[in-house]
Length: 396
Image (cartoon, rainbow, N blue to C red; front, side):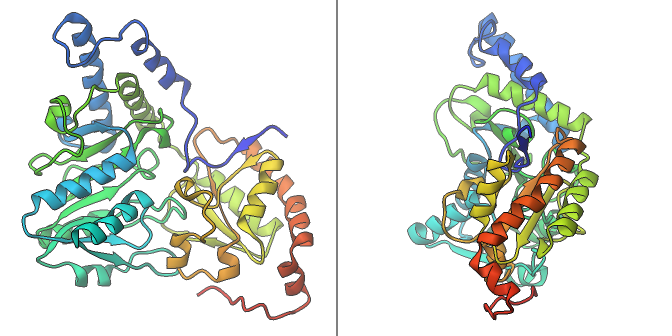
């Protein structure tokens, strides 16, 4: 079987059209976009076009609201730190318990080093935010709310437009990590109360090492990276022109061909539930990304599952690529109170617009044999079939 890639929430294959758009800016058009001569002017025009392409994908009102960065992590960090610098005496930040580590790690560090108070709002068993707890936590000291648009592990979508309105009423800024949502869901920022939004090129068939931060016009901003006056003084450093051009082209392609993979994802998911059994879907199946399926396999170890899948030429994930190698179970699934033995057997399958129906069918044909072998090797599975009480309970 030819290798099959179902880990697109970790990264996507660069679209050939994106690569073709980038190549001239490594060779013929190599000027510095900030230079005043002809070489620079030609390149500067390409950067402006890319800015408009990203603006169009986000439905932003103004092209100058787009600040190019090195990716989602930098964008998240820049948004959080800027808000704390510009919001006066406000010293509290609100986030969710299931955010990406790009947000949670920084906020944890700020708690220790600066004494910032962080409210981590919980989720229910489907990964849905506790909006009532969110309302209660908002207050006069809230500087920023940072809530992801869609969860990278389960695909569950948060009501960010509603959350942003509530934050505005409390006088707080609102940032959303939309790294997983951009290119998969229609986004129209005009008319919303969203102040800042992060995205990353390699999640939408663009290059790695480039991203953007949307900063709504009128929002005070302090740069994370200081130096020259690039990006209107909001991000110092010579522009990564090939990467920016690639991101712009990827945004253009995503806008024209927004991934419609929901039916294919459902085909994979339903096939797994029927053919493999003893597994459950994690997340809000009624309100999630169209490409993402997170399935917990009872009495099995996720790392063992991934190893056997990889040997069969199937690439999937146990969760965020940024936490690979960790022996700890997913913080997202723990926040959802997934039972321990199911928790350790969770696997994320994430499709893209390049995923073919024949690939899904090939995976479904291979899985019964793979899981049959895994269960033969698992003492927990054997104990289950013998009726032993292993302390694993139904989902709540």
